[in-house]
Image (cartoon, rainbow, N blue to C red; front, side, top):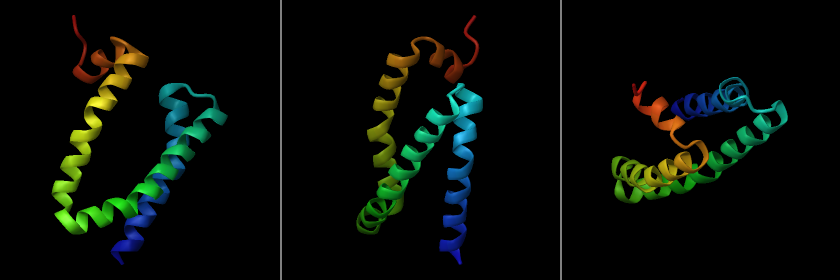
Length: 95
């Protein structure tokens, strides 16, 4: 039962992601579709690998390691592509 619930939530997330990219970031519908497909592909490929690692060292440790590994990359990418604007969105209005 739990597998069906989690798969259904992933499928719902995948179907809504294209609209999110289009509405929130102003992507062209075709580019939004490609970006959503890339996210879904990455999630589908990484899910089994994350499950194997979580079975070995535990789910909480795996999630913490993933967050710690990705955080500096996301911040550097946001700084490179968005400049100061992402800091205002992340922290709040800086006056």
